[in-house]
Length: 273
Image 1 (cartoon, rainbow, N blue to C red):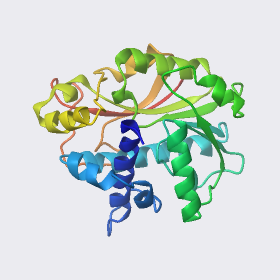
Image 2 (cartoon, rainbow, N blue to C red; image 1 turned 30 degrees about the horizontal axis):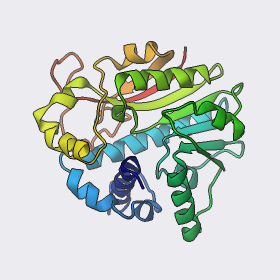
Image 3 (cartoon, rainbow, N blue to C red; image 1 turned 90 degrees about the horizontal axis):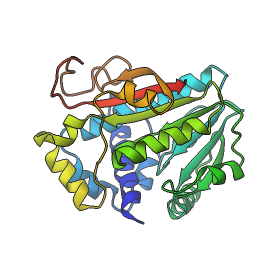
Image 4 (cartoon, rainbow, N blue to C red; image 1 turned 180 degrees about the vertical axis):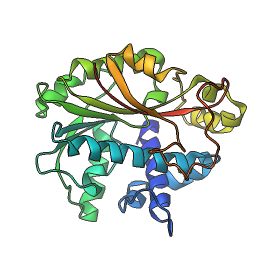
């Protein structure tokens, strides 16, 4: 599996650690430990200082809640997981009978994930459709060929992805999602700010990622404006530790938004403008 696929393994390892907490856990993912093989836990040990473990737990819960809330309105039943990796939401969340979940990622990763899930006897709780595609190319036709309906509102989930892209690539991806979306579509996405990418506190983690071929490239200090420039209107922008985003679990104080120079991670819900 290539370097990008290994990032899916260490985030799965982080979900396994959260699942195995004796109390106070934010998410349950009983498949995560098996999906983290072969390198997930080794990489988590390598990267896992600071707030990485609580961040992934908080982010996972934020995205879980977004999926549950959006589908609970009854207006959206079509969900696309972009760079789905070893995500197991379709196997562990409650889904309405009408839900269809498309998982978009590299073909070899999807094949490996399918084989592992089959060995575990895991059964999806909604219709699950794999879409093998290269996100660096024109991948929307493959999604449409798999059954995606551009005329139906969609919830797009891009978790743990944008910071691996350049600003041009991140902008292009979100504009692609907007162009493929029907009215009332939604988006869940996370980002970091530019300070975090320059901070000495983050340096060890970021250098380790770069050495392994998966550098973090993109950050924005104004997530609302960035999203607006790609066709999306933010409806919630939260930082870890705030209400609805791991309040009580984030080990650091949440800095006021107006304070300059603070490292920040953004957890965002948005809708098509």
